[in-house]
Length: 461
Image (spheres, rainbow, N blue to C red):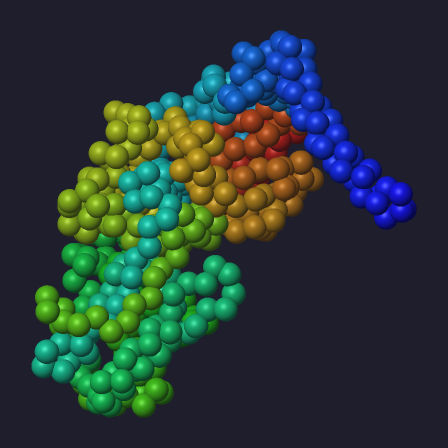
């Protein structure tokens, strides 16, 4: 027999043999799975129940560093009280304060009683309400429309941070410059090169100036309208505010349209017809970011504007009176209102506002507990680092609070407050509100507020 025939003979029986070997191996493996492996998996807590097609989820592992899950030592209320009471109060005036365990609400320190003037700490309450009612992702649009008779309408949507110039830097506020570019392109696509301009600020009512605000605050807050730009400052380097923010915005918009080749022959207030065609729109920063700006920069305009949006969301008019009424109702719903409290605005300019430390502390705790209100916490200035606390906590007895205390300031004539939270040196989160009034001046009041909150941060007590 030739070698070639012998090779063909061997191939004839090798391949069938290999097929049988593979088949028998698969049968043996299946049997092992059913008889040996499956019972073992049934007892495995990572699988459970013996069901390979429906494995159970393993229990969560224990913390790698379980000591970080809780404070190394709980604050003793008596020790903390003694520590805070020992701080000098020379020239401080009336003091009301509350410190609680931010996790449980357990009271650790209290001084004074009743409702007090909060100044800008009021923004903590109105910020919580804005986030709760409006939602952190809500935006407000400034739009342009073309009417049937050829008029161009600029309609304000209540964007408190609308800027005149395009914004490259975070957080990218909406700008009239971008709206003008989009609007001019839309007009030119229609063959329109000249328009009369109407401006519509009718989303909000009035009066634009809250009657509870002293005129001395005319550089600290502008008249509140649904159409405003650059915080109603004709000169962004100046504190001077325009008495007619909507007109300032319209004039700014007209100039920007001209830069894009659109001639504007006249500018006047006008309502937006229901059949007008929308040409362009720019959206505000989300409410969550607006609240952060309100708290970090103590932005009076934005705080009050957000409150008026809350009034609209609750079916009321956007006015000072309706805003104040809705604020009280919403704080009551959230469990933050009590007898003796009075609200006239959302930014705290009114010296007639009266709130309790309990309400302020309660709002901070809500921000710590509820993810949808988290911007209330992330917006609080950091002691010695950001916002209105940037130049605070410089005294030797307040240095422990730098970078540790996060709190909203409050300052009007004769009133200084601080509201926020801190984590002690032992890892216990504390929420606090400290309110002073009628003292010798801001210097002594601020020094005590810084010392007291720093004492919380360094507390190993």
